[in-house]
Length: 207
Image (cartoon, rainbow, N blue to C red; front, side):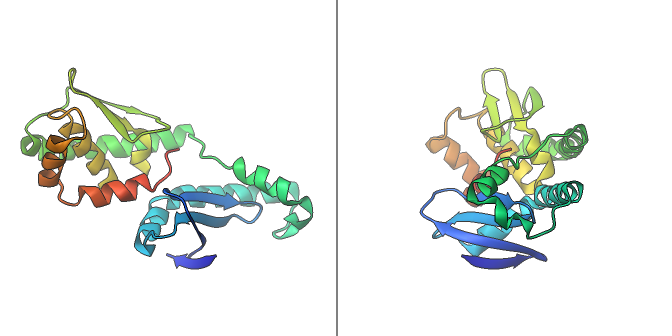
């Protein structure tokens, strides 16, 4: 296990034979643990943590409040046993509060006009309608026949470049429905670094 200090946040990094990166906040102290593929670069891990920083800080604060309510001191979890620690960690999930939904939607809606004005002429097509949704398995989707694009609301709480990438990705589907040669050719013209953006985004956790 290695330790990294990312913008003042202590992170434990465990390398495993896995394909994706996973984040866990361990109770009761809010220790941040990243499980990462063995060959993943430190830069990708740093970008991943920075993109999740608001989520991480929220959960660390939630755990601190829970400790205060229960009277549990940091380090008092040792007598609980391993099973209790695993169960507690597994229960830590992101909670979509009304405030977070509003903020995420506001951030996306504020960015969309500029993004569409920029990318519409470049791509040559505009979506007929854009819907924001809470998605659990994807960042966006497009129905080329109707021109409808759906964006994951989570993008409004992440690095703005991910919103731009997903929007361009879905708008490109207005020309190419799959991810074949034509789609890749167009993406390489629009966003030459799109593969790197895809790797970084796919390393993030969909809430």
